[in-house]
Image (cartoon, rainbow, N blue to C red; front, side, top):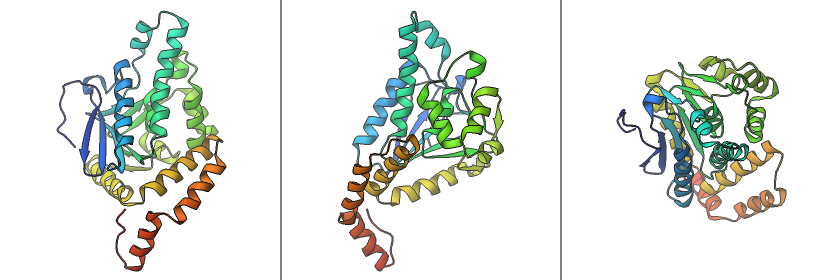
Length: 261
């Protein structure tokens, strides 16, 4: 990771071999997302999707929090009509859904607290590794906000109905151990082991067959949404049986070595 600074910027993209890292970088404001950050995130997601050398994405924050969510004051200032307010909310939803649909596997490196809409941003990642001092908070009910549909669906399909109700309807903070218990966190570690845990998982993902992972991730997400494209999933399965990845995988297994995809 790069050195942490107090200079606020939009999201920062870093590269390290097959791994890309997007770092939210407004530490003095707990990495609160501004309207302009949304376009930057979509642009970075497009760059990552277009680069076949990138095999895994890590999303994290600078400083003591992952993210305080979307700047509601910014939304209010920009929303002079109901239609504009809806489009401001939809812009954030588009970013989160785009992250969930990325072909490469994604890890959220939760370096601290996660609040508001950023709880959904993290949930859109495939894995969430957090420090044991983290906390999360979904304040929609306190704000009088009915959360957007795809975010509620993500909470329900990932965490279950009862946990989604608790988080949305009580609007109470929960601690890292509770985040782990309900399945929000994939793993919880002391801060000094955070990078080691993330690196280990990132290296595993970067070493697996990218097309097979991309297809299975898509199928899993479609299953969760109740929108599985059966024909496309069956076709990807058939294609994999005669593709280059399975040839290399079987050869590597026979030669007792790591595959080179």
